Length: 177
Ligand code: IMP
Ligand code: MG
Image (cartoon, helix red, strand yellow):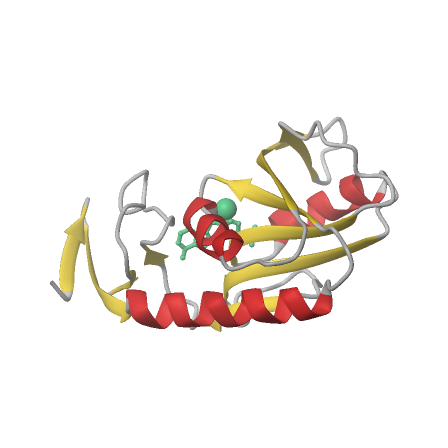
């Protein structure tokens, strides 16, 4: 089906599963080359990145590890900014080559606020792999090292991404009409 309804909104198919799989495989191959002889630790950000992380990981042939975290934002003591805390980040990060796996970078706020927390642990290196990027929506300066698809500033669901909890199980990525 090329059109679906989730809650109150209608979505049309935007990226087929074949397109996604092909792109994810290509990213994995690039990472295999870039990290030859290293042992990167992937940090997948839940919930949205679980499918991307699983498919990407299957194509990695280097020695590698993965851990999963949740990010929760709350207003800090200062009224100025949101503080991001990570849940489940119990791996030793010092001296490690870290690669963050994110489903989508929209404004960039989540990752921008989270990166300093990771850098505090003094990893050897830190890169970001995002399946989707909305460049027109990104307001926070971030360097994305691996990007699956640059997409327009329209809401998308599927392949792990949700609209109010629904749609994560779709094999394709759908765009709101
Ligand atoms: P950011 O902090 O604005 O970059 O966005 C952070 C999070 O918002 C992403 O990790 C997603 O979980 C969610 N998000 C942003 N855009 C979309 C979308 O189009 N569909 C589903 N979730 C989205
Ligand atoms: Mg997310």
